[in-house]
Length: 453
Image 1 (cartoon, rainbow, N blue to C red):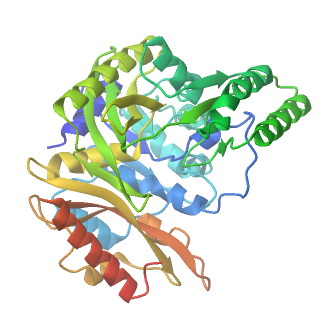
Image 2 (spheres, rainbow, N blue to C red; image 1 turned 180 degrees about the vertical axis):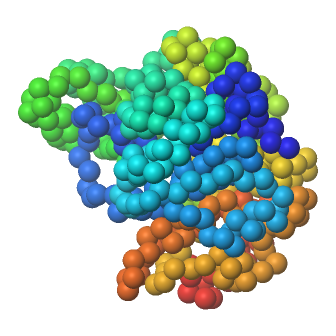
């Protein structure tokens, strides 16, 4: 039943039978952005502990003959819950000293005993795979002698730049919003000059960092004064650094009916396989998760599939292989913007693929989402299971919430202080109304016990 994982191994290794060691180094873009010029940030990100504990998602991507390196040992009752669903789990290796500010890869590099274990696995033919590959993952590969089942970090960074995304779509003649790529201050100023008529006409225009992620690294250009100020700040930063190259995209913010995310895999041999497309689910303008399958026509799916194959061939020619996620949009007239951004790495949807194969069959739909929780103490899974009794998925073909990451619930726990966490899962049912009913009941129970914010 591990269809996606076997397909992934075929892409990464050239065959479906090998063993992989998984690293969930989420927001690897932060590493790729080192040394790059950035836009002014209003505040520092305070959610690093939760983001870094998203590494536990890899548990449900790996199969029983694989390995996963984690920042913390999974809750035993949570593992029993997954086992009860019939999911064969990988061998887990836990770092000795988990720093909430570090990715799991950085933690692993500080653990000599773990490095020795990974060296032994490498001798048995295990390969290393990561959410995305940066110089840190390359360092772990070198220290352990475990080859990366991925392109090198330079290639991975290059194809994940928003500048690359826009230029690739231009090269392939794909529809995009009006926009410009900028790799010098002069190009940035020219892009702002060309965007001024759009801003004057009331259109929303944004500037985006090449490696911005999760809504960071983006600024709205709502006036000439704002554009002049941002250009001046970037120019001063360039002068101070002596690094003349910048990497920004300036783009019109166009009207849309819905957002999409689709995924394909590129094999070592250049073979491209379209995996799926999902629809972003929003309520009151707030993003709540991904609906699968997406509500698209056959013609729209065909267009995305064709786009995936064209992009995949381009990426393969540029030295990339592995998972690719692409953000896309449906305009108000049901036309597509098939490429908003290329993410040539694992995506949130990637970690849902294996359980999606098993639990979201024909005639079923699912909503991947998370529930914010505000806690004053660590919350064990057994307590959550009791709290949500009757609402958790207990079998294929059933209805309920499949929890696919529990580490993020308690990631921010510090004795004596309140903290924020997230409960991630897939709501599975036979209709949107059923999903809404389960979703509302879960929210109500969490609120009633004070666990939901």
